[in-house]
Image (tube, rainbow, N blue to C red; front, top):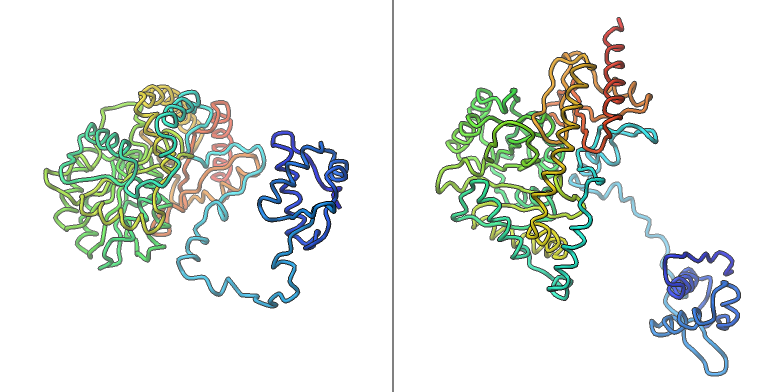
Length: 487
């Protein structure tokens, strides 16, 4: 005993000794009422100072793990773990006790069942921001500023609706995008995914069907299925959703909601044209279908005119649109802050559901984001990262056009490109060939609502170096050409 203790250099020694002794007592290595080594003996056994052991013993006594007997030393406190009458059995088959919600979540978990890559591979699978670009000095300053102003408030419980200064900031931010805030309100969420889940959980399920673009965001597909919805996908065109097929889908049945990603669509990267935005809203409004807009990557425009979000395109007094926003793909995904903008009545209900489920989003995260935005850092950071991402976007586009024998390339901005081959091509087979050469990408079939897309792939370039973009796309292109030459 005591020979397995290893002292780490980056943590107070007395806490390490205390935790080590706790573990010995909790695992039964030290029994109740067993005498402990003296402070001098333990310091020699663990190779620490006697003062370290004295501090550890004092804490253990305060916490009720040991007791002292004058003139005899310290002893372990007996506990229920020492009882001999422990219940036996209790082996449950948890696999048989899981519901469909849990099974769907596990089956669609890409982190578990997704792409496995060799160490050092060129990874085109991520569309997260490049952490090397993070604005750490100003994030640190924002944190210290806010903690100095109201640290004791931020570390206590917050409000389900969200941190008021951030709500007010985001309301003005959305107004600057052209959104009419009359009759609307905001709810802060822990990222986009919680916002979507909250909305889906309060919708009255009449038809049990959701309308969306095909392909669409895999996380959205997963959540629709977990909430028990059937998914009707409408094909995409180079400038967004096919209006003709949207009209056909609307004539064939009713839907509880429509989910659209109009800007830098995931996975195609397409930006829906202004004309299509207005007409799609007209068609969906006529059918009385609420629209969930995913404000994905809206800020990452590298060329062309600004296009307003759908939330800014609805007519005055229109309350049918629900906007889901997040800075995760632009700023810092580790700060899990998103928002829902919708009719005030809906936000009031969502607030109650949010309070019942998670009480509130981290006030510390919200206040940090607010202070960073308030200090004027976002605009400077966005300008800097857009220059980097634009260079990568243009390089990746040029490399794809030069190297890959594709039928179509889409992606008007954002952090990814979408490649389509002829319909008979299989990108999962291409992935196997490329993975063996140290390059991986996301096969496009996971984004399709109808089991299609086997001839497509998504290339995320945000976290890939420029040299690796060139090398990786060349490998993909050579592998694809080799597959096409096979009889």
